[in-house]
Length: 54
Image (cartoon, rainbow, N blue to C red; front, side, top):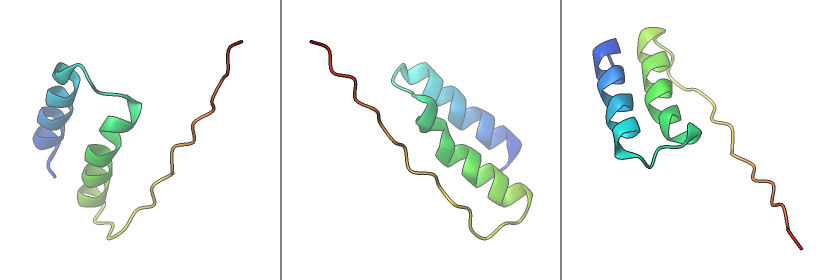
């Protein structure tokens, strides 16, 4: 993925109004792998803390 492709991708995500912090990770991963010629990166699984309100 080139830098302009990355900007286009994240801009589309942002404009959708449904993007979260984790929505951008795939594009960033592709950019890093392409830029630094990395064959594999590790994704961190999102942990969700549930807060119960009484």
